[in-house]
Amino acid sequence: MIKYLPIFVTALLFISTSVFAQRDFSEVEIKIVPVKDSIYMLQGSGGNIGLSVGNDGVFMIDDEFAELSEKITAAIRTLSNKPIKFLANTHFHGDHTGGNGKFEDAGAVVLAQENVRKRLKNDDKSAGLPVITFKNDLTLHLNGNDIMAVHVDSAHTDSDALIYFPQSNVMHTGDTFITNGFPFIDLKSGGSIDGDIEAGKAGLMLANSETIIIPGHGELATYSDYETYVDMLKTLRENVQNAINNGKKRSEISTMENLTSTFYTDAEADKSFINGPKIRETIYDSLKAKME
Image 1 (tube, rainbow, N blue to C red):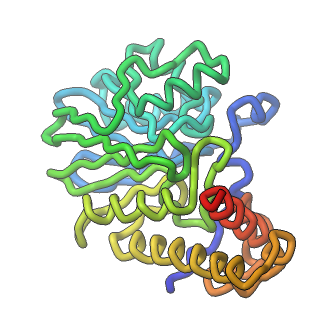
Image 2 (image 1 turned 90 degrees about the vertical axis):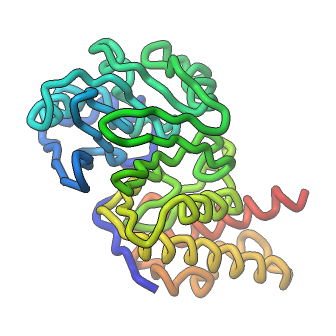
């Protein structure tokens, strides 16, 4: 099993935009990472941004935080002077949708799975709500790609979508796949361990051995990396389920480092948003909810 060592404290990456109201973004730099053809990944502070640039305009995936919108736009302008036509959200969390309103004001059409709009609306975010929504899937034809947005249900949240560029063979997974630690499964927002596993399976079926993967957080990945991550999810689930079957309570499972240490020890994951006890408790809660 390949280990993805946590690169930074991921606690800053998954919480809603309001928590960051007092944060200083002035030192954040936007890094441009070429992916393939005219597709790029941008990294700043928050979820990874995907870009497709070409004669048809700019297609953007996720947008981090509103405070970074000017820097993100400046980075995009080094790649293309075309308008940002569409902005797709992979899910509703603020580190992926915080800039929606800014880019909408600049002319982008925001699109997402229908639960993104519902959840943002419930959070009283009147600006940047998706104006195009889909239930299961949506296809756009831009810059030489038939861009496919595919809903994966009850995974990281209930609003997740995989974005696939078939001609370029590039996929953005949102937070259903990350390369820097244990997964964040947002149970309160419709996520589940079983759904997260199924999302990974769906992504692997949509992709192939040559697909380049833009994860929700972390560095560019390969198909093999993606397989390894899904195998980790399966093993974590199996280990916690076996502990439940053996009569272990939640408080006991929380302390059972051996259930997860094959991938990250509790010491390695200690400074991450999802540490060892947290992932064990989350999987326990998800499995117990399914049993009820």
